[in-house]
Image 1 (spheres, chains in turn purple, blue):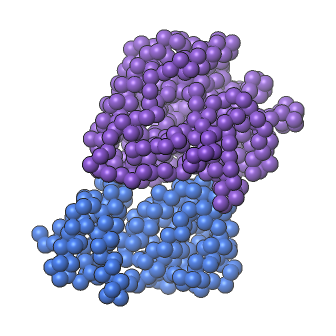
Image 2 (image 1 turned 60 degrees about the vertical axis):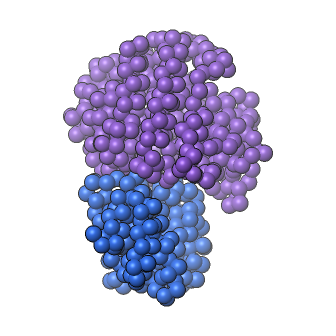
Image 3 (image 1 turned 90 degrees about the horizontal axis):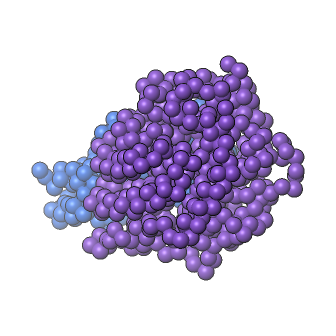
Length: 420
Length: 211
């Protein structure tokens, strides 16, 4: 089976020759550039090769064609034209991380020293404006710097929180046409498309680290407060955002057609370690109507399956996600309260594909032995892959300090599982 | 309903403007500011914590209640200071070095305040040395260390070790955050762990009262 066939079969809940695997197709299923560099050097040698940082917020490394061919990886992905810092993946230049990893970063990846000896990052690389990201000294990735203008409840305007949502422009279309050609050149691989502007209230995006002068509600706690205390405002933002996303989706469906198999719609987190972040009622009121609109449109006009990413315990919300029309759940955080793999598979395995859950990145992968990692991966594959409906991925991105031995244990488990 | 009962309800419901106005009205009616805290705000936050633990409310509702409590405290604090009323216990809290995440830490801080602790919030990305100097300066009963990231768990280990080895005044140490467990707390030599902000308030009281 090709990677594309394997992904198609998995999404159709059919058995495959081995489990379909994704590392690197999206901003939530990747590997930190330090981990990619280590793995690549071990497998391919070429110590002078610098891995590209293709997602500069979490500092994810590109899984290039050569590395992918050396690993059981079946899926490639298309990100948005601009990163969360508003940078574009071009004009690469060398950069060295705190851990000494030598990599390549986009030309607009401009940092200055932060007061704690970490780095400040700037929207679109413009160091003349306030920084929008901060990586602490010794850190592995950035977090947003909150730039919240004073809030006057009587003058709140939904348009201020909609600045980042717009119809695709000529530059976007040119980018996506080039991506379509790239997909066609990799026709034996599964394909995922990140849908721009389709995540409602994603807390990584609310502070707008890509904007030079964000307006509206941009503070994280203030946004969460708004989902309770300013619901009409939030609903108005979501409704207008959804209308823009619907138009863009029709354009993208026309452009990509069946070359894409999966549409990643949302990375908004609805779970915490101990339970859902919000009530089912809040999900149904605030998010479900818009999730339904986008899922319905995609299913009406394309063959694409739709992908929702939400960290944490979302077990109580899963029936609602399924009712919203989602086909795929990621990252399947089995380390959270009610996310027992066997129960998830038995209760929801017929209705949704689990994309993730392959190994625990909070405990097992960083702190376990290679044997423990191998055993957990085998166990998860046995549970989740039965009858299809599973794409192997770690629970969220593989972290920077992960050793080669641990990553190899994971891939060995994937390969061995194919033999039964 | 009495003014204090209304204030109690306003905090639970997250009505921040009402909470501020009701705190002011209670003062205007002659209530002792310490009594307003003890009889309205502390029980309100305890009720919020209970509802959170039983999944009747979730993080956003808790944040809204916390905001209402802060509004009421904004009115009461000058009067508390003027009357020389201070909480019995003091706590320090911060997110460990390398970690910029603070929502969980902030929720714990507000629940501790709601349990009548004086809370000194050191913020996020706090070096171990800063915890040590703050402990020497403020002599708290309790210090809370937060971490969201797996990659900053070693900084938590380092911070506990620094506090224990620096000859600080005796202090209870609590740890928490998404990847943190009771087992980890035991391994690093912390005195307590709580899986969520509501439990952290109960655990904090238990720790300082048993000291």
